[in-house]
Image (cartoon, rainbow, N blue to C red; front, side, top):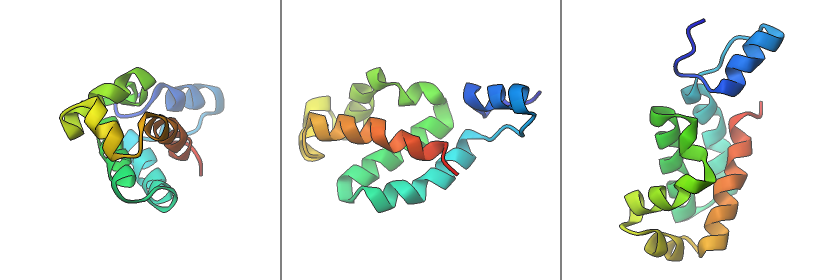
Length: 105
């Protein structure tokens, strides 16, 4: 099975249900519109940045522990990024919340 650009979830679905694996890019494309409609402005732009990291580097980019690193990459520091996006609680909630859109149809 060639599923290098797919997540473990998709590989397991292939094994269990013989469904075709979905690439991270496909998940991101289908979820991007929902992210843009649910989140606004800078927060939506940050989540799109996270989606791009997910597509290129894998599911590890969606780990909650990765959030400070992603904020630092985009905003020079996690503290500055969180402040610019509405505070740490807002960012954390959005970071975890938007991920449900990746696997919804």
